[in-house]
Structures are given as structure tokens and as C-alpha cells.
Image (cartoon, rainbow, N blue to C red; front, side):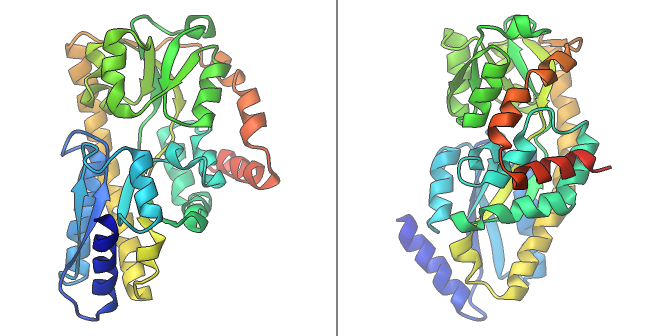
Length: 321
């Protein structure tokens, strides 16, 4: 079915002046108003305006088209047009995507945004094209922290915790460096795993902690802020390559406009989510021993940032002012 739909899209793109082409974009977030979901919808509005109605995008969130891994596989072969994923999902196929995923790389949200808006970010966006994915934009994913039934203030508190991580070798290594036991699983399984005790903890940003209602199962959110890894919006290279240069530029411009929209919405939702979980009884722990956690990551950098090219990009990110 997906193959036939992809062929139909390709045929429409090949025909000058064809009727409106609707691209499908996948997202796992449950809320129809989640910042990444809303941002791609905004991109669709911009595209429709810029293209005179030639292009639009329909967002399929709530994992309607599958997990991030499943939808990425579809995008790579052109069976699905677009996908919004956490950049960690790309680490195994696109080495440069590891850089913004590295723990404690960014000093602040502002620093992260400057890096991703600059030459380092542009190089990373281009880094997946050999895998059939064209990077269009980075979206904020906030600062990820650990939540559990107890505070995690020190490395000793993290030791032995069964913690859900994204299905990524890097995040297994990060958990191990903290002394925790990594349990990779899709986002959709985390709530039940926390409720049943299959895992002791998970890690994510505040809007996801609230949106997936994980605060109901893990009441203590400890601000380790170990990652500010962004989300990434990708389009199938098989589809993108069939567009004219003018249409490709239009897609890139619309994606960039959606970034500004997403960041504003993210900042608003981050504040709102924090208020919701706090009123619901979640405990926010701020006195975390961040230097100790950061120092524990040396083996992770040694293992994953293991080429001169990756080391160059990490240094360029760290040096960005």
C-alpha cells in the first residue's frame, strides 16, 4: 500500500501543474497540539501559501503509522514522505547525528539553538542523505532529565536503577555511565512499564513527562538535564530528489519558518507542563550534582566521538558562542 502511495506522489511531482500533493508526516506524540505536531502543521500552512496550494502536509501523530524506527524505515525507501523523530533514532545510521545527542554537550537551551542554527547544525542535517533521508529542520526537545519514584541527586542514587532509554546504543552507554541499568523500549510502552514496575525510572523532558502522563507513575522529576538532544524533521530523499530545485528550496524555507513557530510553542508548553505536573503532586528536584554526572560521561565520549570528524564537530559545538 505504502509503495503504491509513494509512486502516486512521485507521479504527481513529475507532472508540472498537477493537483495538490499531500505529504504524510509521522510523529509519535499523543497530543494534537504538541509543539512538533503543531510545527509540521504550521509548515503545511506555509507551504500551501508559498506553493499556491500545490503542496500540503498531513500529520499522523499518536504513532498512527508506527514507532519511530518503523516510520524511519518507510521514509528511507520512499514509502512515507516525512517523519519527525528524536535525533537519537538516527544515531545508528548517521554518525554525525550523534554530536547533538551527546550528554552535557550544551550549556543551555540558548547555546543549543545557536549551535543548531549555525554551520554545525547544517552539516548534521546533511549527514543522513546517504541513508535516504534529507534533514529539513531541528526542533527543540528541551532538557531531558530522570524521573522515578525517588530523587536522583547523585550518581549513587542512579546506581542500579532500571531506567527506560531510547532504543540507541548511545543511551544505553549513558545509563551505564551513571551506574543505571538501561532498558530500551518505545515511548508508547513506558507508562505501563513504570506502573507495573518493569522499570524503575525513565528520562525525558517536562512536556513529554506531562503529555504521556508519566508523572502519574513516577512522581519525582530530578533535573539532571543530561541531554538537550533535538528532534529532527526529515523527508524521503527518494521523494525530495524528484522535486525541482525551486520546490526543494521552498520546502527548506517552510521548514525553517516552522522552527521559529515550534520554539515559541515549546517554551510556552514547557512552562505549562511544569505547572500541570507540579499541581498534580510531582516533586521537582533541582539540587542535582551535575558536575559529577558530567564527569562520569568521559567514557561515553571516548567510545562514540571516536573519529577526527566527530571530534571536530563536538569542539565546534562547544566553542559556539
